[in-house]
Image 1 (cartoon, rainbow, N blue to C red):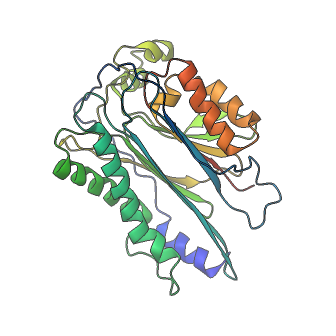
Image 2 (image 1 turned 30 degrees about the horizontal axis):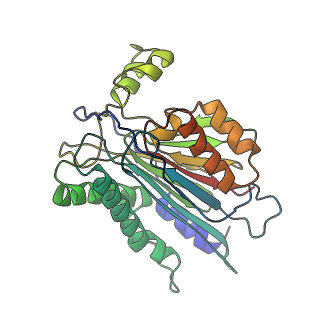
Length: 310
């Protein structure tokens, strides 16, 4: 273990923080029909890291407005880099998905502002410190930086987009450690090499809460008419706390960060099989987006897929 890595771990290894108190309930509106448009990451990243030196993160993404919306309220940010030097190999990844709330004015603006504010905060206060010539760890723990970033994004929406709202799910990977800041119902999944999926975040939705309390079965929750109603979101003025999770990254496999336009219409088993069988990250992302549109495309669709080091 290098001195740089020891410094980072000693500075940032803190316990998991998880919010307990829900905020008032927020909802979404019905969608309308609009022709498909999509944005695709151009790089054909391979699905395997086996034999790659130095060990590193690989990432790709895809996005679509869907088939029943007239504009895109999702936003994403993806940054993947590595420093390989005498101190060792230091992979770094920053991935953000924000889903602007349909039915709230300027949802697409709220998601963009939240994504920009979070990315700027973490790059300024974390990324530039970690990779500067004279390395100095940031003064605040990573969990605190993530929390502050979420609140800055929340305040920026309140100041610039009256009535706008958005989810915000952010993943930071540094070395073999992962920290997630999460508000709303976008999701982070871990996916094994065999295609088995596991949700790492909890939906901040009314239906999910009722399911956790045993008042709805998973089958009932999947088709509930209020399944898109949130009790926690950015930009609504009510007090809330984000869910902050810190854990080692899986030893191999993938991370999927996506909006509910993907996971809400494509079964997890199908998503896992798609990732397992696709020849490239790019194709896996596009096939997942295509599957959501094939299922009706009722919402905007965003997916970021990260291949973890073996």
